[in-house]
Length: 165
Image 1 (cartoon, rainbow, N blue to C red):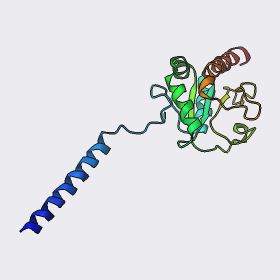
Image 2: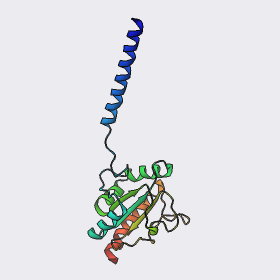
Image 3: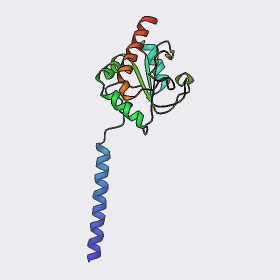
Image 4: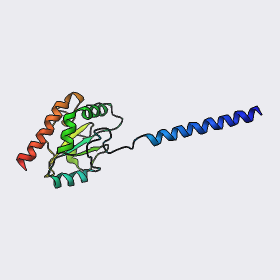
């Protein structure tokens, strides 16, 4: 009798534990294309879609290369998502893409395939080699303290679209 009661209790505990786990999974919000970079921003899924939308809308494409388990990427993502100015610029004026894999376009890795890496592509589909971060050995990397520079580079990309194209 004791063993039957113990077995029944274990089955009930296992069932309630699995039910609780299933409820937690259902409650969790679905993963969005933002991947934490800004849920209010509209993100494109692929580089090709980004190029198409940039050309069609006459807006620059901002490409963020990152990896989920990269500590530098996580720190930059936090700073990026917490900057109201960057979020507003991105939402209103850019076609936005964040990639966790490399593209076939070698123009997006002129100085290597490192992360985090942020590059701008103008609506004429030209990768802007003149919009870079502060490092000479990794031209397109940014760190959390570089948010003011990134903001200025976003404004520069917008200005170039208005004056050059």
